[in-house]
Length: 285
Image 1 (cartoon, helix red, strand yellow):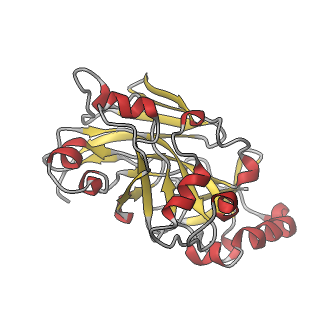
Image 2 (tube, rainbow, N blue to C red; image 1 turned 90 degrees about the horizontal axis):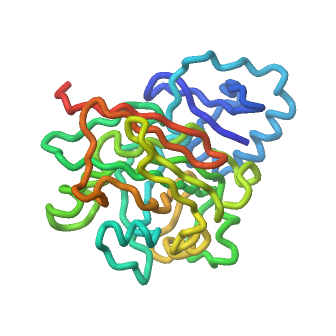
């Protein structure tokens, strides 16, 4: 299945994509949130679709897409998980996964605007494969880790490099700014995706390809990452783990290239669709 949420921000309805057509699943009566995933929601939704597919209304063209997962308890990210990205940022290849968090208030839809924070001059892009957790996970064995996956999604781990690197402390302050986590267009269940260790992921800025990588170059693959993170905290259904970015971020250029108002980011991953974000300057509401 491919799960979507659509409509005005904060008022999203649920839906699915079947044969490239978007359908409304509001009649199912649940949002795609922690409770949905925890209570066998995917299987119950599958049964609902089998019984009601012919009755589902189509989603109108042009409807805004929201994050395909309603506000998760955590957005976790793995830093420096591609050797080429570590090299371009002059960082040592990590012996263990680098773990940081993005705030849940950073979460936006796949085609929503990305806002450059106030006083920012080093806002950057990062295309990433995101993993959506399907059931409560604590001290998971690597051999069983994929049993805890509900699905996968496209994520742009937008990052403010000055806040992240030059302001002291942890990376989180450069990662969790508002609009810094566009996710979607959909969550694909594992059966939709195939080999997660061989997915092309790419990103363009103003039509120019900046990143063009493949998950075959992971330092730490998805099962290892899930097992690793679960040693330090309990993962809840609907939690998102973003698995790192390949080379080609703005920080890696000489001199660095950073986003400015009016720039357009386009990105995609094999089997997970594409997204597009226009960069806007911060303005007080």
